[in-house]
Amino acid sequence: MSDSPTGSTGLDYKAAGLDLDLYDKTLEGMSRWVRRTHTPRVMDGFGGFASLFSLDFNARLFNRNYKHPVLVSGCDGVGTKLKVAAMLNRHDTVGIDLVAMSVNDCLCAGAEPLFFLDYIAIPKDDPALVESLVKGVSEGCVQAGCALVGGETAILPDVYKPNDYDLAGFCLAVADRDSLVTGKKIRVGDAVIGLASSGLHSNGYSLARKIVFERAGLKADSVVPELGGTVGDALLEPTRIYAKAIVGLMRHYPVKKRVIRGLAHITGEGLEGNVPRVLPPNCRVRLWPGSWPVPPIFNWLQQLGGVSEAEMFRVFNMGIGFVVICSHHFADSIVHQLEKLGEKAFRIGEVVPGETGLEFAKRSEPAF
Image (cartoon, rainbow, N blue to C red; front, side, top):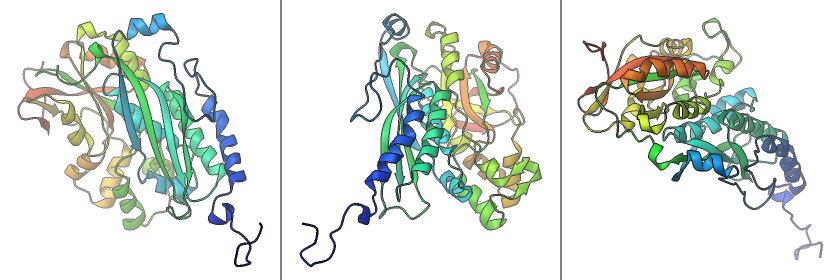
């Protein structure tokens, strides 16, 4: 029957906002970017109901590194940085941010990223948009050394307004039980090393957007000499992925040395909110003012918005995207090793006795 009981033309899925033919085209567009990340550990192809991943493709290597494997998981999104991407109609970098947020969290346990899954929610079928997003996720997975094994693309016309969309990601990583970094071994006198961020990363965008677009009235394509380019370029700079450096560091300093004692991903609430999360009781981190360069975007935002120094450090990463707490005997060696692995690293503080938390003060005398 082609007509409804009332005599009008019958409805179909397309009339409800979902074009299945276009959806198939969307899936075809993402296929090559997904396959680009696959390693021999990925056991199936693309498009199945579930993804298969072998933990021990190379049994000898896996068993040598992981006598008691522990799975480590992380899940996160990108937040309102997506609004900036929509303003510029530039969507091929926020997928990198998506991978970074979950992968960097898993690294805090000293874990090696294995695979990643994504969730994309959009108001209508848009093959070009989805391919651009997945291209970014694929690039993030390549940087992180993990496989993009699957995900979900949801067409939700009644949930999202035109030009809106959302992303979520899930990472699974592995660590040996005896090599887990929990922060429990941190002690007074340990060194605090900061790894440089690439910019805002994926946090503080509600405040940044309010400063830039509402208070200052700038446009995404406004050129700012202090930033060396446009506002949009600066705000869309992808979050740095620290997988190569941290996994390399864990392998260089085996568990028997107990050198790496704490790892922290600096996200929302900045250094003050994230470093104390890994500290044991009666340990406090003292950061040395001026011990690392603060990128121009933070000073620019502070002046443009009249934001206090305290609020800047409470909201933004202020140039440090990841923190390593280690034995002070190995601090210089670790900084050198991180630089060999491609990171800009700085010795930015120390662990001192006191109530769990973080403070800014001059270096202790005598220095450890």
